[in-house]
Amino acid sequence: MRIIAIIGARPQFIKHFPFEKACEGRIDLKTIHTGQHYDENMSAVFFEQLGMKKPDYMLNIGSDSHGAQTAKMMIEIEEILVQEKPDGIVVYGDTNSTLAGALVASKIHIPIFHIEAGLRSYNKQMPEEINRILTDHISSCLFTPSNIATKNLNDEGLTQNVYEVGDIMKDLISYIKNKGLVKEINDKDYYYATIHRPYNTDEKSRLKYVLEALNKLNRRVIFPIHPRTKNNMGAFKLNIEDYPNIDFIAPQSYINNLSYLINSKGLITDSGGMQKEAYWVEKRCVTIRTETEWLETLIGGNNFLLFHDLSGMNDKLNESGLNWNDELYGNGESSKVIVDKILNF
Ligand code: UD1
Image (cartoon, rainbow, N blue to C red; front, side, top):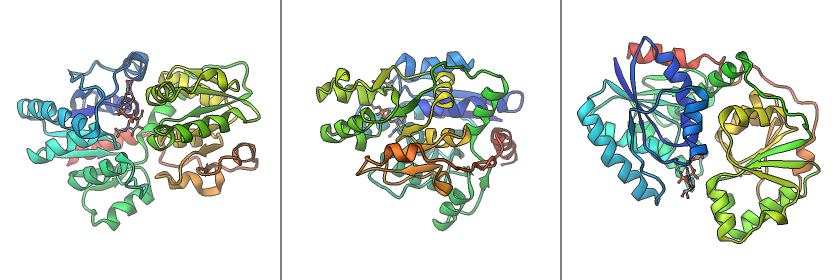
């Protein structure tokens, strides 16, 4: 069986690794990298550090408005799929690269396997929410990480070829831990923070408020800064020297990022994936959003949503007495099950 996977943004490189491994000797896998993320430390570093195969096609689309970026991806993906005629495509998650691949494949009748299907934030202001809904509805086979995701699909009338397989990102965490690749950090008295969503970074007053809130925390904050956040800080003339409690560092490789998280006293984020990763490594998380698609992490207060008023962040990060469910989002072997299901399809 010949499958083409379409990736393009940082979280997809991470999800692709376990799938690529699970395909070895079972599925003939090729990869298209759209180039949505292109900086060395947003892209190449993941392939190098994890020892992933170089993409078979590198499209170098780069940044643009949503419409232009997605359209450029579609034009090039279509040419490749018409020529390659794969038995199916795999797309991950909810980025513009996901939607571009799925739209093209659906029009030329190539089966679509959507990994991380069924997530909903019910916030249609998020481009990711539109990307998820559309991709789910044109996919041939939907792999969900949880009960709630499966139910979301069923509620929208999607009941055929829906498989609850757990979360593929958990496969990678298990792999890194089992291989003993997590790095030790001596001074552990810090919080780790990642902020990049448009609603936290695209307006000066909001970005300033978030940075000020981090700057006031009772521990120092290590903050790998996403290009969107960095660009906007520059455009708004927000200077790193004005936030002495925050250590701004470059975006980190997968293993470094995980190591920073594991050694920390807690996470502050607006990322989707990092909320789950914090849960799996048993770190309290404060999510700077009004909603999350990862609802299960909120049960028991392990993850906590704060948005308009961030003054409670310190207290939330320091609450004790949490319980963690080892089984949340599967057992770390979902990629193998996904490959079984694709072969049976
Ligand atoms: C994208 C995904 C988001 C995911 C995030 C992870 C969509 C709609 N959003 O958001 O779901 O959580 O990736 O990082 O697909 N830039 C660079 N270098 C890079 C990449 C981006 O400088 O390598 C800058 C560009 O100025 C670009 C901006 O960052 O305009 C935003 O990048 P983009 O890929 O459009 O969206 P993200 O915010 O990264």
